[in-house]
Length: 184
Image (cartoon, rainbow, N blue to C red; front, side, top):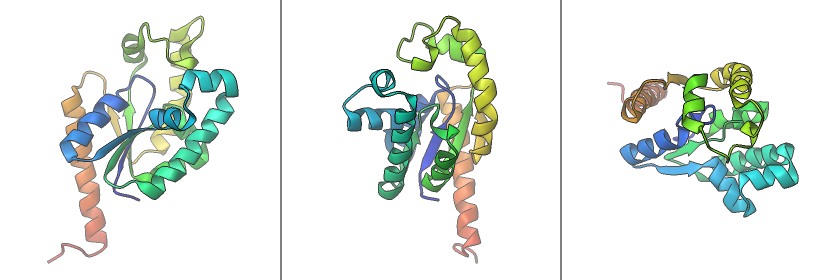
């Protein structure tokens, strides 16, 4: 595992906001995988979905993870909501760094994303039902793919970041002890 923190979770859970806070607090770099892909493709995600399809986009996510594993250290990586769904991506995420699942409730997602037209998976007749279905399907996948699960509802960005840093430091310390570093 590389010395990065990777944030996974459903759209609207706060990956970008929490990621930027963590990057500032730890003096790490910050990468959002969706922005990374948009820059590489010179196209926004909605247009990639519309012109090339979801499978093409999911392939871009996998290749982006492989690239990030080879070139990042001390980086906060905010992943797209669907990125961990592919088995190979879940394995790559754990190689990339300490994976944190920011778990969010349906109501919070709907409140945060109200009026947001940039989410292709919510461009449907009943977004509330769609969020419920997607969360029900994705939650166990996110949990299995994470080293740590943090419930975000009702917490400040600062409190979430503190919980992640505390657990990240514990993990780093235990890895040092496993290697015999820092033992008296």
